[in-house]
Length: 217
Image 1 (cartoon, one colour):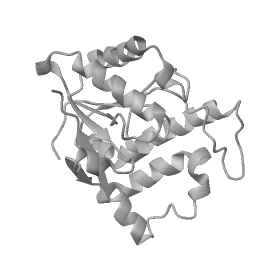
Image 2: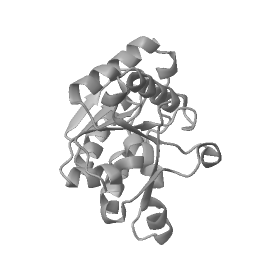
Image 3: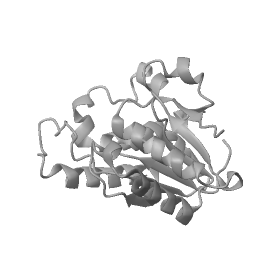
């Protein structure tokens, strides 16, 4: 896996990082610093734990704690909170959102950004976040732009985008991926019966992480 100078992850919700946690852990083991800009605290999440241990008032605090635990398990030391409200990113003033992301890019000067592929990531917050990242990078001089790798999982995304450009084998850090998932108890506790590395089908599914490289015309 190619070593990066610095990776910036821009995602909207606590737990979104679990999908690329294996790749991030591998990069960190190579000595690459990772900054994670998480735009919301997922305060509109529907899951409250099983049995419920959160409510609408306490959920933001709990999810922040879970996010911090997940980042610690991956090895992410630079976690930044965007302070936006869950399920409203598509309605944010676009210039302000893009500016917030551009400021972070200017600060950390990443060689690689990981975000969602706009239009192919199911949730409106996912799509709006990815689109804002693309806008921020597109505004940069071409020679200064970091590589942007996008996560996509909408139905038919391979038909529209082609096969993923990058597939990373994360089998050696599956325990890290599992720890990242388990950190988000409020959201994934209902899956506790299947979150096991003993399940060969799950091991096979979790062992590879897929990314599409965004191409700026």
